[in-house]
Amino acid sequence: MKRFVFIAFLGLYLAQGAARVSAQESKRDPCPRPSEGSVIREPDDLRSQNSVLKVDFTLRTQTEPNGLKRYCYIDAAGQESPTLRVKPGDLIILNLKNEVTGPPQDPSSTAPHHMHAHQEADVCASGPMSSTSTNLHFHGLEIPPTCHQDDVLKTSIQSGASPFQYRFRIPEDQPPGLYWYHPHIHGFTKIQVLGGASGAIIVEGIERANKAVAGLPERVLIIRDQDLLNPNSPPSKSEPVIPKMLFDRDGDVANNGTGFGKPAKDLSVNFVPVPYPDYPPAAIQIRPGEQELWRVLNASAITYLNLEVLFQHKPQPMGLVALDGVPLGENPSLPDVVSWQKHLGVPPGARVEFIVTGPPVGVPGLFVTRTVDTGPGGENDTNRALATITASVDAPELRSKLALSPTPLPAPRLPWLGDVTPVRTRRLYFSEKLLEPNNPNRATEFYLTVEGQTPAPFDPESEVPNITVTAGTVEDWIIENRSNELHAFHIHQLHFMLLDYLGRQVDEPFLRDTVNVPYYDGKALIYPSVRLRMDFRDPKIVGDFVYHCHLLEHEDNGMMGLIRVEPAERPRNSKTNASRPSRSARLCRAPGATGGD
Ligand SMILES: [Cu+2]
Image (cartoon, rainbow, N blue to C red; front, side, top):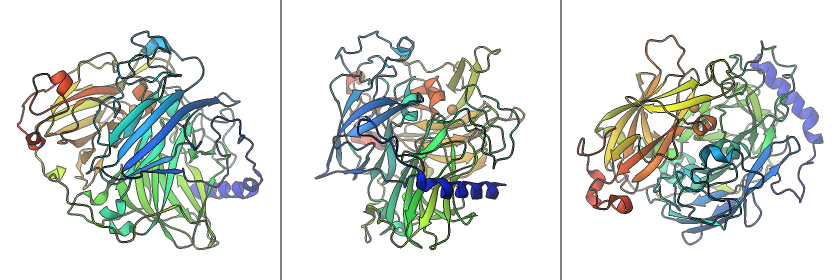
């Protein structure tokens, strides 16, 4: 059945793709976007010079005729969501101007201090958070959770305020790979990210970690989701007939378990939309037989991906070399490893970097996402095409090529995380509660609770951390899912190692910052879980930050917790001096030194 459908996708593209014109692209648009069926353009690159990358971003909005609201990062040259390319040790100076228009949605629900929107008070000190305020999170970067760097708890830039400056250094030991930026305004992250507010950050030098990619051209693909362009259309005639349409607790189309029917959201690839119901694919041009490194970010708000490359409908090997910005060879015992896969699951927020070989001329290729079983309460993430892959000797050369003879990365300064003894084990769990059981589409609270505490939605005004740890230590966390849908666990400022998945030991020889946690079927004797080894050894990472579900409507509705990392040797005045632990703090792992939950 799947084969049949993909043939249908292709036929449709060939019939209609060439005729489409870029009707939406107009000079008057604050944020122009490509039209469906277009050739995928890579985001423009902003590269650091003399170890400094200066960026001026304006966040703009535009409402489409059908009511969809775009949120766009536009740089000084008018480019949307450029890729920030930096090297370890580089300084990023990013000025963000908020020009979001329109009335704030629901400002009373999350605005703690009832401050006037244009009051230029302290951006760092809990201004109102609304649909018209914004900030930035640098997902995966191991930088301090402080204002002007990577704080999302209090930083809120109001519309019309003067540009706010982010200024931070990429750590010397940040693994080379794909990271990303997006807003993180509590309660409103989903609408801004759905509107397109996201972009890639590449820490250069992946070829220094893995010789298999040395000399390869690289292609950046950002997959975003957005509200359905054609929400009232019936499914394509090439699909099997689906039983009655149900909705989940978030009001999205619920997973019907078939892989077909109406998806919760449309997808786009580098902003080329691939809308339901016909999914006209975008287009990728490639040279026949040429190997490329594809760097794919799932910047979706709620959509899981299960990526596959097909040539003449047959799955092709994808040579995975990095996950969540971390080369698989991060573990020094596994240099230059390539993990050949037929498909790659990518939760919202995660990244995969893999080697793809172009098909021979005349062999049709298709880049697709297959259905993901998100659970009875989860979204309908359907089978669909993303892009055709067409080989031609004249395919344009990709803009970036990795160095052919790179110098290897220096040896890691800390022992491999899997070899470190954790100081304690904690258990956390995802759960959901219907506040109005008779109204299944409304008022669900989403919780991410530390075992022993009372489930409660994240409270942005609370200063009391759910978890306190000591810098220099390593902990094991078990994350359970007690709900009937998938969740993706993410923590800011650091990476972790996946030790067990569903009770089975995996001891992955690489690190992640986002991981899927399987759903509970309501029958099993134990809840599905993952076991993670959390790395708090970096002495720069002290202070308050968050961990949460990366399905943004879950996060916005409370599925988040507050963690405080205290310096190993606590200075007298810990509140203001928290970011300067001594050098010896780094390897201190005295069990039970402070904190606990
Ligand atoms: Cu979730």
